[in-house]
Length: 257
Image 1 (cartoon, rainbow, N blue to C red):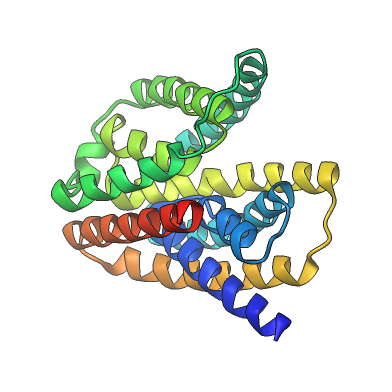
Image 2 (cartoon, rainbow, N blue to C red; image 1 turned 45 degrees about the vertical axis):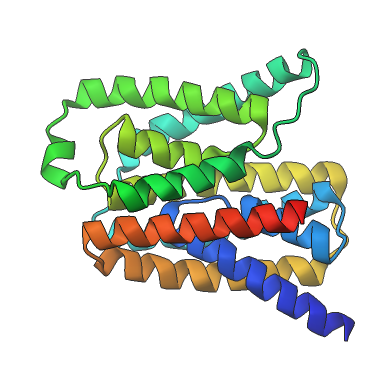
């Protein structure tokens, strides 16, 4: 009975995380962590490590799918990733000097708001409009926006995937598929760094849950990424919005009900 419960919980956690990753570049940690903590009573630090580990392959496979369909900006993605990592570390250090505050719901509320935005105002930017921006301007934008995302993630401790998607579409003017592809590309590396540090510091005792979360998240992320790359922009934007709103509501329910 115990193992059946583990399989059921990790399946639905992986499904939610995979759909969020494949459709919207959302971090698996936003879904898997609260689910494992609430239903399987796994320690929070280890649950985050498992979620980040689940993110690695799911994001990498999603990024590969988007790249194969020409929907990934590798050059500026690498620049933004490096900047995000540096400023996340600086933000974490700054946060340690500040009084404690409750910011745990930041990522969840951002997920909800971004979902509503995509439903009401679909991202209709074309690749031609996106590529019209000069390479120099795009490089500077990537550095500045990476610094903003990294600082917020370091101080708040969450929201990286959603912040990247919001800034890539609303500030940098990326077409939605390229924004998601670039976001999951960055997330693959940041998740790998985060999961290794979590396991190195806190250890790992729930190997079955780790393997199942990785497999289920990978499966659903692959399905979502394949579908997303075939969908029309308006359809994809609204499906992404619906997925984000549902995940946001479910996460809030898991956390507070």
